[in-house]
Image 1 (cartoon, rainbow, N blue to C red):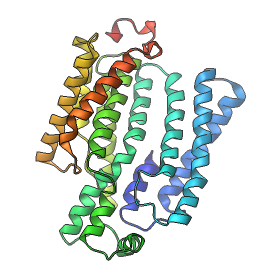
Image 2: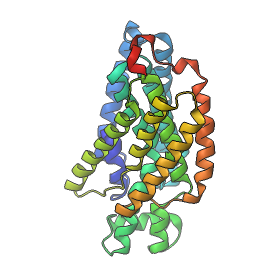
Image 3: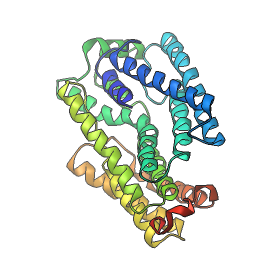
Length: 316
């Protein structure tokens, strides 16, 4: 996670390099994970069969994704967006590994692991969150990206280094992607975390923990003179709405989804007034509301997500 956080900031400043420090840190983490997966596979300790299969499948997908991503960069040059198929394999592999570990945990540890799952899900949206400041710095005449990166990106886009090119580099996908990915996807992760862990204020704690990590990581990157990003503080408003919905509207998932959608978008607008937020098609909120209603209702019908009986009153 540390390597991946550094990696995004690195790619908004320097030209890509297979052996860049963030990639080496990522590789160290991957090696550690492989050793631990091997230990679980050999001993059978730590997780049940289903969790072990999730972890092993996730690791296999992740390891396949690495050479696929390298080939992608060799063929296509700079992979300008986080929203690429080869990167998606990395996210999917990580998600399956985390799902397996989450299945084998309980209580606070499980909530912490859900914060890691949220970080992995939200990761593609970092492109727009870094892009906000990347584009702003260009307009202010002090670009965060080094000239070699801008020139390489412009050559790949077959256009000069100008404002339109930098804008495309900073925001490679449509404005409706960010709000739907976060208000629907990231919020759904928080909903499932609250359901699975079963403790009061789980969603709020998971969101707060993730945001705290982002703030600390952003501060450290800023000290090292790396680009910084817009933080998704609006997720905290959504998380509070989720926990309140589980407390007071446990049998009305649609109401909870609508309340949370409203809280998320209100938080997004408020954040935009105070600090930076990525360009977003806020008029897509009805689509987000409908999707979240369907997904919230769908997860409520999956009995396997119910918390263990041992949690007792803490599950209320």
